[in-house]
Length: 131
Image 1 (spheres, rainbow, N blue to C red):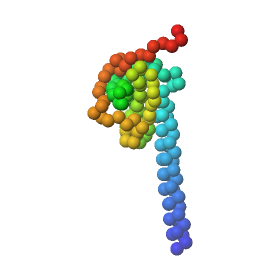
Image 2 (tube, rainbow, N blue to C red):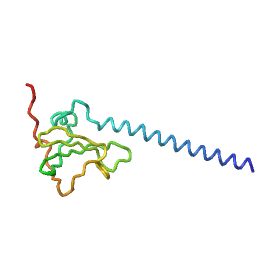
Image 3 (cartoon, one colour):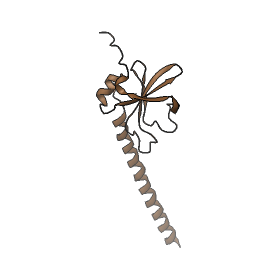
Image 4 (cartoon, rainbow, N blue to C red):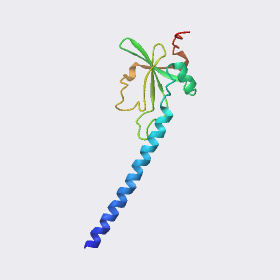
């Protein structure tokens, strides 16, 4: 009887170990994915973004509360992301914020009917300051 209980405990511990390795692997992969979508500190404007992510060609234009914003989607930023990474620019072309996951429950709450696809090149570039 004791031998059967011990064997059950061994099997349970092995299963927990396999599960733990999987969770650690996902966590490590999430970190690698984040570093691929997190903009460097030097990315502050749409021009900087174009240099950093030259493959991105389309933005979604949204007019919210009388202000215009542009949302550019990137690659997935997490293993279990429900949407791609998103980069938000204001009407002057300044990077306002970004998120690793534009899917369910994100902080970007823009109604779908307020979005219109536009070429990334139509986002105005901010004027140079201090030159």
